[in-house]
Image 1: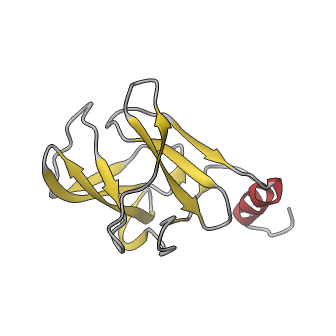
Image 2: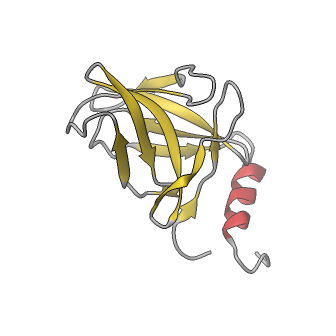
Image 3: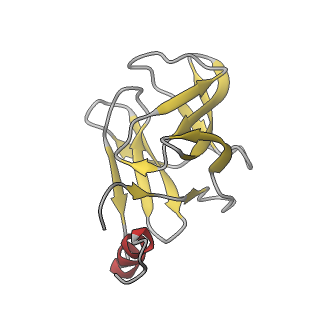
Length: 136
């Protein structure tokens, strides 16, 4: 496998996909999230390429170092807090379509994020899904 990892995520509560095919980032459908930033409600769209920090803001301001509150655009439940980042902001998690979770820091500008798997087979399936030849 060469290149970035494409991740597909879903809400851990309602299991609906968070992929937004209408708004593209890095040439792919984005990850669409409801967001509250500085008392304004709107949406933040993230790249589905793991390691890309490209994002778009809709009806909320792109305020450096601000902490966003994220929720599912389908069931409106806040994403579960999984801990605190080194920058002191909450870390939240989304469910991966192929098992496991991705954790991200909620502070705008912080690059802390991780992929985690309980079952190593899920990690292998994710990497195998990236292989365009389907031989790996």
